[in-house]
Amino acid sequence: MVYTKNLVLVCTGRDALRAAKQGMPVLHLCLGITSAGALQRLQLPTTETRCLLGLCDPPPDLAACNADRLAADLVFEARRTGAPGVFADFEHDTPQIRLLLAAFDRALHEAGIPFYVPLACGRTLTYAILTTPTALSGGSLTAYISSLQGIYGAARIAAFLQPVSQDFTLPSASPNGKILTPSERDNLLARTGSQTFFSRELCAKYFTYTDTDGHAHFVLFDDASTLEAKLAQLSGCGVQTVFALFPDAVELISPS
Image (tube, rainbow, N blue to C red; front, side):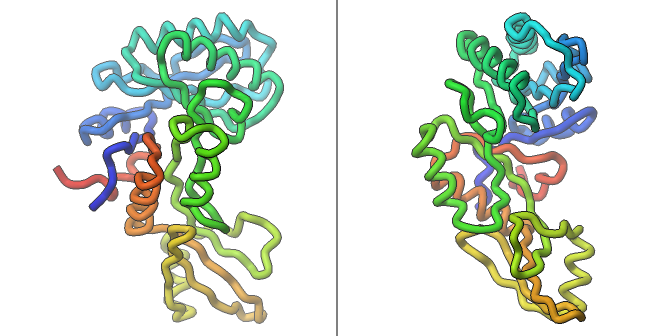
Protein backbone atom coordinates (compact mmCIF):
# COMPACT_ATOMS: atom_id res chain seq x y z
CA MET A 1 0.00 0.00 0.00
CA VAL A 2 1.33 3.45 -0.97
CA TYR A 3 0.45 6.20 1.51
CA THR A 4 -0.37 9.03 -0.93
CA LYS A 5 -3.24 10.59 1.03
CA ASN A 6 -1.14 13.55 2.19
CA LEU A 7 1.20 13.73 -0.81
CA VAL A 8 1.53 17.09 -2.61
CA LEU A 9 3.16 17.10 -6.06
CA VAL A 10 5.70 19.91 -6.57
CA CYS A 11 6.09 21.17 -10.12
CA THR A 12 6.93 24.04 -12.46
CA GLY A 13 5.74 25.10 -15.89
CA ARG A 14 3.66 22.69 -17.94
CA ASP A 15 4.22 19.94 -15.40
CA ALA A 16 1.56 21.67 -13.24
CA LEU A 17 -1.22 20.64 -15.63
CA ARG A 18 0.17 17.11 -15.95
CA ALA A 19 0.43 16.79 -12.18
CA ALA A 20 -3.10 18.09 -11.65
CA LYS A 21 -4.42 15.26 -13.82
CA GLN A 22 -3.17 12.80 -11.18
CA GLY A 23 -6.05 13.95 -8.99
CA MET A 24 -3.73 15.01 -6.16
CA PRO A 25 -2.85 18.36 -4.57
CA VAL A 26 -0.28 20.35 -6.53
CA LEU A 27 2.30 22.94 -5.47
CA HIS A 28 3.10 25.19 -8.42
CA LEU A 29 6.38 27.14 -8.16
CA CYS A 30 5.05 30.12 -10.09
CA LEU A 31 5.91 33.22 -8.04
CA GLY A 32 9.14 35.11 -7.49
CA ILE A 33 10.47 38.34 -6.02
CA THR A 34 12.22 40.88 -8.23
CA SER A 35 15.52 42.49 -7.24
CA ALA A 36 13.49 45.64 -6.54
CA GLY A 37 11.41 43.76 -3.98
CA ALA A 38 8.14 43.27 -5.86
CA LEU A 39 6.08 40.11 -6.23
CA GLN A 40 6.50 38.60 -9.68
CA ARG A 41 4.46 35.99 -11.56
CA LEU A 42 7.03 33.70 -13.15
CA GLN A 43 4.27 31.61 -14.70
CA LEU A 44 0.52 31.79 -14.69
CA PRO A 45 -0.85 29.81 -11.72
CA THR A 46 -2.95 26.80 -12.61
CA THR A 47 -6.09 28.39 -11.18
CA GLU A 48 -8.42 25.60 -12.21
CA THR A 49 -6.55 23.16 -9.95
CA ARG A 50 -6.61 25.42 -6.87
CA CYS A 51 -2.93 24.63 -6.45
CA LEU A 52 -0.68 25.76 -3.63
CA LEU A 53 1.44 28.73 -4.66
CA GLY A 54 5.22 28.28 -4.58
CA LEU A 55 7.39 31.36 -4.01
CA CYS A 56 10.93 30.94 -5.36
CA ASP A 57 14.09 32.08 -3.56
CA PRO A 58 14.67 35.87 -3.82
CA PRO A 59 17.67 37.04 -5.89
CA PRO A 60 20.93 37.60 -3.98
CA ASP A 61 20.92 41.28 -4.99
CA LEU A 62 17.49 41.88 -3.45
CA ALA A 63 17.17 45.52 -2.47
CA ALA A 64 15.57 46.68 0.76
CA CYS A 65 11.82 46.34 0.34
CA ASN A 66 8.55 46.87 2.18
CA ALA A 67 8.04 43.43 3.70
CA ASP A 68 4.49 44.17 4.86
CA ARG A 69 3.45 45.40 1.42
CA LEU A 70 4.97 42.33 -0.20
CA ALA A 71 3.15 40.13 2.30
CA ALA A 72 -0.16 41.85 1.48
CA ASP A 73 0.46 41.24 -2.25
CA LEU A 74 1.16 37.57 -1.51
CA VAL A 75 -2.11 37.23 0.43
CA PHE A 76 -3.98 38.94 -2.43
CA GLU A 77 -2.49 36.53 -4.99
CA ALA A 78 -3.33 33.49 -2.86
CA ARG A 79 -6.93 34.65 -2.43
CA ARG A 80 -7.25 35.57 -6.11
CA THR A 81 -6.25 32.09 -7.23
CA GLY A 82 -8.05 30.25 -4.42
CA ALA A 83 -4.75 28.72 -3.29
CA PRO A 84 -5.10 26.41 -0.27
CA GLY A 85 -1.58 27.33 0.88
CA VAL A 86 1.70 29.06 0.10
CA PHE A 87 5.19 27.53 0.09
CA ALA A 88 8.27 29.76 0.38
CA ASP A 89 10.98 27.75 -1.39
CA PHE A 90 13.76 29.77 0.25
CA GLU A 91 17.27 28.38 0.70
CA HIS A 92 19.16 31.12 2.53
CA ASP A 93 18.87 32.29 6.12
CA THR A 94 19.77 35.99 6.12
CA PRO A 95 18.44 38.92 8.17
CA GLN A 96 16.49 40.22 5.17
CA ILE A 97 15.01 36.80 4.44
CA ARG A 98 13.97 36.46 8.09
CA LEU A 99 12.26 39.85 7.90
CA LEU A 100 10.34 38.81 4.78
CA LEU A 101 9.34 35.44 6.17
CA ALA A 102 8.14 36.97 9.44
CA ALA A 103 5.90 39.38 7.51
CA PHE A 104 4.55 36.55 5.34
CA ASP A 105 3.99 34.42 8.43
CA ARG A 106 1.87 37.08 10.15
CA ALA A 107 -0.12 38.08 7.07
CA LEU A 108 -0.93 34.56 5.86
CA HIS A 109 -1.87 33.46 9.38
CA GLU A 110 -4.28 36.38 9.72
CA ALA A 111 -5.75 35.45 6.32
CA GLY A 112 -6.19 31.83 7.38
CA ILE A 113 -3.86 30.55 4.63
CA PRO A 114 -1.37 27.79 5.57
CA PHE A 115 2.24 28.85 5.07
CA TYR A 116 5.02 26.30 4.48
CA VAL A 117 8.70 27.16 4.98
CA PRO A 118 11.86 25.00 4.92
CA LEU A 119 12.94 24.19 8.46
CA ALA A 120 16.43 25.60 7.86
CA CYS A 121 15.18 29.18 7.49
CA GLY A 122 11.87 29.07 9.38
CA ARG A 123 12.81 28.02 12.91
CA THR A 124 12.03 31.43 14.41
CA LEU A 125 8.59 31.80 12.82
CA THR A 126 5.48 31.61 14.96
CA TYR A 127 2.82 30.03 12.76
CA ALA A 128 4.46 28.54 9.65
CA ILE A 129 4.48 24.82 8.96
CA LEU A 130 8.13 23.79 8.85
CA THR A 131 9.16 21.40 6.09
CA THR A 132 12.10 19.05 6.58
CA PRO A 133 13.82 16.78 4.04
CA THR A 134 13.61 13.04 4.58
CA ALA A 135 17.11 12.26 3.27
CA LEU A 136 19.13 11.35 6.37
CA SER A 137 22.62 9.85 6.51
CA GLY A 138 22.42 8.86 10.16
CA GLY A 139 20.04 8.30 13.04
CA SER A 140 16.38 7.37 12.62
CA LEU A 141 13.75 9.03 10.42
CA THR A 142 10.98 8.33 12.93
CA ALA A 143 13.04 9.63 15.86
CA TYR A 144 14.04 12.73 13.89
CA ILE A 145 10.46 13.61 12.94
CA SER A 146 9.24 12.91 16.46
CA SER A 147 11.90 15.20 17.94
CA LEU A 148 10.82 18.07 15.65
CA GLN A 149 7.19 17.50 16.55
CA GLY A 150 8.16 17.67 20.21
CA ILE A 151 9.81 21.05 19.67
CA TYR A 152 7.36 22.75 17.31
CA GLY A 153 4.17 20.71 17.67
CA ALA A 154 2.97 17.89 15.43
CA ALA A 155 0.75 20.15 13.32
CA ARG A 156 3.71 22.38 12.38
CA ILE A 157 5.91 19.69 10.81
CA ALA A 158 5.69 18.69 7.15
CA ALA A 159 8.16 16.71 5.06
CA PHE A 160 9.82 16.93 1.65
CA LEU A 161 10.41 13.52 0.12
CA GLN A 162 13.92 13.78 -1.33
CA PRO A 163 15.44 10.60 -2.77
CA VAL A 164 19.04 10.05 -1.72
CA SER A 165 21.80 8.37 -3.74
CA GLN A 166 25.21 9.06 -2.25
CA ASP A 167 28.58 7.36 -1.96
CA PHE A 168 30.46 7.96 1.32
CA THR A 169 34.16 7.21 1.73
CA LEU A 170 34.68 5.84 5.23
CA PRO A 171 35.31 7.27 7.69
CA SER A 172 33.21 10.25 6.59
CA ALA A 173 33.33 13.57 8.42
CA SER A 174 30.55 15.00 6.27
CA PRO A 175 26.82 14.13 6.22
CA ASN A 176 26.98 14.43 2.43
CA GLY A 177 28.60 11.97 0.08
CA LYS A 178 29.28 11.93 -3.65
CA ILE A 179 25.99 11.99 -5.54
CA LEU A 180 25.40 8.99 -7.79
CA THR A 181 22.93 8.79 -10.65
CA PRO A 182 20.82 5.60 -10.79
CA SER A 183 22.89 4.32 -13.72
CA GLU A 184 26.17 5.05 -11.93
CA ARG A 185 24.86 3.22 -8.88
CA ASP A 186 23.71 0.24 -10.92
CA ASN A 187 27.08 0.03 -12.67
CA LEU A 188 28.85 0.21 -9.31
CA LEU A 189 26.70 -2.60 -7.95
CA ALA A 190 27.37 -4.74 -11.00
CA ARG A 191 31.12 -4.08 -10.88
CA THR A 192 31.54 -4.74 -7.16
CA GLY A 193 28.98 -7.52 -6.80
CA SER A 194 27.84 -5.96 -3.52
CA GLN A 195 24.69 -7.06 -1.72
CA THR A 196 22.08 -4.43 -0.85
CA PHE A 197 20.38 -4.14 2.54
CA PHE A 198 17.47 -2.11 3.93
CA SER A 199 17.93 0.17 6.93
CA ARG A 200 14.65 0.57 8.79
CA GLU A 201 16.11 3.47 10.81
CA LEU A 202 17.15 5.52 7.78
CA CYS A 203 14.35 4.05 5.67
CA ALA A 204 16.77 3.61 2.79
CA LYS A 205 18.83 0.90 1.11
CA TYR A 206 22.60 0.62 1.31
CA PHE A 207 25.59 -1.43 0.28
CA THR A 208 29.31 -1.36 0.98
CA TYR A 209 32.37 -1.96 -1.18
CA THR A 210 36.13 -1.41 -1.22
CA ASP A 211 37.68 0.60 -4.06
CA THR A 212 40.91 -0.20 -5.92
CA ASP A 213 42.90 1.94 -3.47
CA GLY A 214 41.62 -0.10 -0.51
CA HIS A 215 39.21 2.56 0.79
CA ALA A 216 35.90 1.39 2.26
CA HIS A 217 32.71 2.95 0.87
CA PHE A 218 29.11 3.13 2.08
CA VAL A 219 26.43 3.81 -0.54
CA LEU A 220 23.03 4.99 0.67
CA PHE A 221 20.14 5.19 -1.77
CA ASP A 222 16.38 5.27 -2.30
CA ASP A 223 14.18 3.51 -4.79
CA ALA A 224 10.40 3.24 -5.14
CA SER A 225 10.16 0.74 -2.29
CA THR A 226 12.12 2.90 0.19
CA LEU A 227 10.16 6.02 -0.74
CA GLU A 228 6.96 4.08 -0.08
CA ALA A 229 8.41 3.02 3.27
CA LYS A 230 9.27 6.65 4.08
CA LEU A 231 5.70 7.70 3.31
CA ALA A 232 4.41 4.94 5.58
CA GLN A 233 6.70 6.01 8.43
CA LEU A 234 5.74 9.67 8.01
CA SER A 235 2.07 8.72 8.04
CA GLY A 236 2.68 6.71 11.21
CA CYS A 237 4.27 9.80 12.78
CA GLY A 238 1.16 11.83 11.99
CA VAL A 239 2.79 14.06 9.35
CA GLN A 240 -0.12 15.71 7.53
CA THR A 241 1.68 17.00 4.41
CA VAL A 242 4.47 15.44 2.37
CA PHE A 243 5.84 17.25 -0.70
CA ALA A 244 7.44 15.34 -3.58
CA LEU A 245 8.84 16.50 -6.91
CA PHE A 246 6.84 15.74 -10.05
CA PRO A 247 7.35 13.81 -12.27
CA ASP A 248 9.87 11.99 -10.05
CA ALA A 249 7.05 10.92 -7.73
CA VAL A 250 4.86 9.42 -10.43
CA GLU A 251 5.86 5.86 -9.56
CA LEU A 252 4.61 6.40 -6.00
CA ILE A 253 1.09 7.26 -7.09
CA SER A 254 -1.34 4.41 -6.83
CA PRO A 255 -3.05 3.62 -10.12
CA SER A 256 -6.60 4.92 -10.26
